[in-house]
Image 1 (cartoon, rainbow, N blue to C red):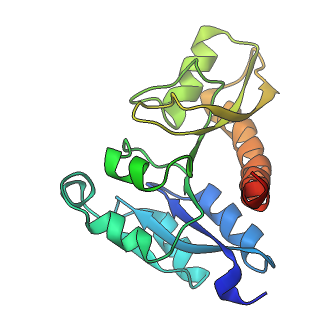
Image 2: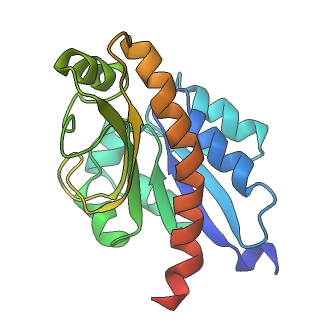
Length: 197
C-alpha cells in the first residue's frame, strides 16, 4: 500500500497532547492509517512539539481564523481526512467543519457522559466534580460531535473505579490510562470499517 492510499487522521489538540502522542505512536508504522496533520489553537500547546517529533505537519490558528474564515477548513482539506480526532481540544467546532466532515469528527471526554459534560468541563475540572459528587465510578466517553459540547452520539464508554480516598489528580491518572488504551483502538476500528458501511 502506497502512503497515498492510507487513511488520514487529523488531530486537534489544545494542551499537552498525551492522547495525540498515543495516536502518533500507534499509527507511525501502520500499514493502512497515518496521522496526516495536527492543529492547535494554543501556541504553548506541547502537542505541537509532539507532532514535530514525528515529522507530522502542525498548524496553529486563532479564534478569528477558526470561526470567521475558511482558512482552517481549507488547510484541513489539503490532507483529505477520513477522520478528525479531537484529543483535548477545548473549542466548539464550527458548523462549517461539521458540514464538511459529517460523522467524521470524534472527541474523547474524560468522564461518563452525559454527566460532567459541557462548557468548562475538561481536565481536572471534570475529575474534581466526580470526586466531590462521591461517584463510585468514572471513565471515558468517545463520541461523534455535533453543534453542542459533549452531546454527540456515543461510540464507546469504558469505566474505572473511583476510590473514597481519591484526589482529582489520582483519578485523572486512572482515566488517562483508559484514554490511552482505547482511543487508538476506536480510531483504528472506525477507519478500517469505513469502507464496509
